[in-house]
Length: 412
Image (cartoon, rainbow, N blue to C red; front, side, top):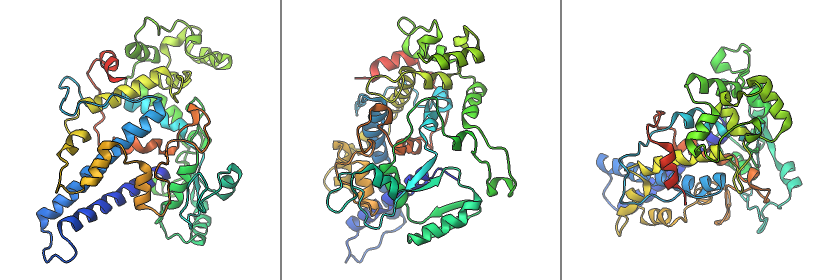
C-alpha cells in the first residue's frame, strides 16, 4: 500500500491541474461562445495548467517547506542567469542517504478526521475545531501505516459509516474522498528527526501484501537496514568523508565519537559496531541522524548542508526554473492572476487546499508548523513528503560538481 499522505497529495495536485484547466478553458472559450477547442487548443490548455502546477509545487517546496525544515532560506536564483557549470542532476548521496531522512519522520499511524463541517482552522473560530489536544486526539481515527488485509473489512465499514466511497483492489484500500487524510496531516505532527524509527517501518514493512506475495506471509523488511545497505551498494562515502567534503576539515574534523554525538549510550553501541576508533567507517545514513540539530533547524549540520546543496543546484542549473517560465506574465496571458500569486509568494499549500477540497483552511495558515510551537525538532507535518513529488520524475544520477564551492554561494 502506498503511503497514504503521498497518495492524497498526488490526488490534490491532480485536482489543482483540472481546476486550472477549467479556468483556462472558460477564459479562452466563454460560456456562450460558439467555438470549441480543437486538439491544439486542448494541448495548450493542458500544458498551461501543468506549467502553473509545477511552479506552485516548486514555490511551496523552496519558499515554504525547505525553510521550515532547514531553518533558513536559499538565495533565489537570478531569473536571467543559468549556471552552465552546475549539473542539475540528483546527487547519489542525496538519493541514497540524505533524502531518506523522511523515514525517521513517519508516524506509526495516520490520523483521519470526519470532515463533515469542512473546518480545520486551528484557531477554532467560526465553528471550527477547538484548539485542544485532547479533542484532536479524540476526534482522530487512526490508520496503521502497515494496515493488513484482516483490517480491510473493518476499515470499509468505518469509512462507509462516514459517508466515504471506497475502492478495494487486492490489499490496497483507497478512499474516494481524501479530505479526512489531508485534515489528519494538517493536525498530526511528524516524528522528530533522530535515530528512532517507528515499528511499522522497522518490523512490519510489507509484512503482508496480497498483490506482491500471492497471499502468503513473508518476512517483513527493516527499512533502516535497507537504507544502510543501499548506501553501501551505491558506494556512498562514509559519514566522515561526506561531512569533510561538504563542510571542510578545519573546524569540522572528526577525531572521536564525541564529535558526532554526546549520547554515551549511543557511543558505546557505535564502538561495539564500528570499533573503538571506527568513526571513519560510519555509514552516512547513520551519522547524519546522530548529529545534534543546528539551532532553529530540524537538521544536523551535515544533513542540512547536503539537502541545501541539492536543492540549490537544482535551482541554479534549471533552464526551466519557475521564475523564468512565469516571466511571460502579462495582460491576456491565461492564468495571469494565478501566475502572479506564485511570483509574489502569496500562493501557498493552504490555498491549494482551499481551492480543491472541502477544508476551510485559513488563508494565512502555515501547513508546515504544528498546532503549538514545540521547537524546531517537531515543527513539520507529514507534508514534508511533498518535495518527493517534485523530484519524482528526476533521473537519479551522481552530480560531478564541486559541492564545497557551490555551498558557499547558495546560502544567505
